[in-house]
Length: 424
Picture (spheres, rainbow, N blue to C red):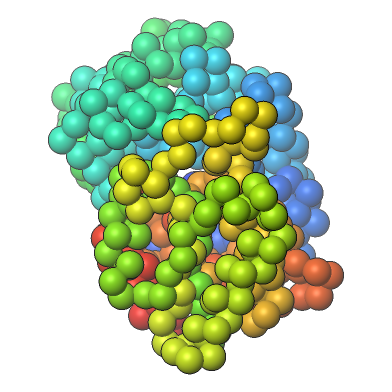
C-alpha cells in the first residue's frame, strides 16, 4: 500500500518527482489525474503515488479543486504523508497557484504549517537568504524573467508567496539548516512558524537531507523534486520499471518549449537528427493537412533510418518566436501544444514506441491526447528527466510506449540525441 502521496502541478513535474522517488527506493507510479489515481489497479504494488495535474497556470479555483480531488484519491489509497510538488523556479502569478493550493491542502489535512523548498541543486536551483537562484543568477535576472506565462520578476520567495496565501510567510536561514536536523526541527516548532509557510534555505543536497529529516512529522511538505533527495524508500535498487520498447523501435522528439535550455537542445540536434519546424501560418490555414505532412515526414525517416528519431520542434532561436500573431488567431503556445499533441496521437497509431517530449505545457497536452492512465518510472536520463513505461489509448486501442517528459529548462544540450541510450 502506498504511504506517500504527491500532487504535481504539471506533467513534467510529476515525472521529475517520481524519478527522484524511484532513485530513493520508492516503487512509484504517476497517475494522470485524480480519477486515474482513484482507479489505480493493484495499489499494493506501489510505495508512492504521484498525481499529475495540469494546474500550474489554470484559474485559482480550478487549481484548488483538482488538487483537493487528487488529495481525496490519495487518502483513499492509504497515503498518510503528502507532498505538493511545484516547479523549482517557483512558476506562479501574483494570485497563485502555489499559495492557494498549499492553503487548501493544509486545511483539508487539518495541518497548520509546512515548508517551502524549491531548491533543486542538481538542476542549479538553490535558495539562500530566502532568495531563489537559477545557477549563478537571481531568479528575476534569469531567463525566467521573460517566461510567457509566469514571468518571475522577484527572487524573494517571501515576497512572491505572501500575496498568494492567507498564512504568514516566514524564513529559516542556512545557518540553522547547517546546524543539523534537530536544530531545524526545533526552529520549525517555534511560535512564529507553527501557523506559517516557512521558506527554508538549501544550497546543496546535504541541506535538503537535513530539511527532509527535520520535517518527518509534517503531514504536508511542499517544494521542487529536490526535497525528495532526503527521503528513503523501502525498495532501494529495485524500484525502476523496465522499458517497453527495444532498440530500433520507432521514436520521435516533440519539442514545444521556447526555453533557453530547449532552444540549445534543438540547435544541437538540428545537425544530427532529421527535423522539421512547426509552421504556425500553415497550421492556422489547414491544421489537419499540416499535421499529416509532419507525421508523414517522420514515418518516411523511420523507413530509411530508424536509428535516428526525427525532431519536430517549435523554436530553435528567438527569431523563431512569433511576435505578430494575427488578430483573433489562436495564441502560438496553444497552437503548438495542439499540433504536437495531434502529431503524438498520429505517430503512436503509426508505430511510435519511444517518444521524448520537451516542455511542461506540451507534455500535458501530449499525455492528455494519448489518454495515458499511468506512467511507471524507468531509467533516468538527466536530473529531473526519466523514461516512463506508459499505457496509452489514443484511438481506443491500447499501446505500450516509452515516454520521456522533459521540463523546458532541464537536460544537457545533447539530450535529444543521447536519451535513447538509456532504453536498454
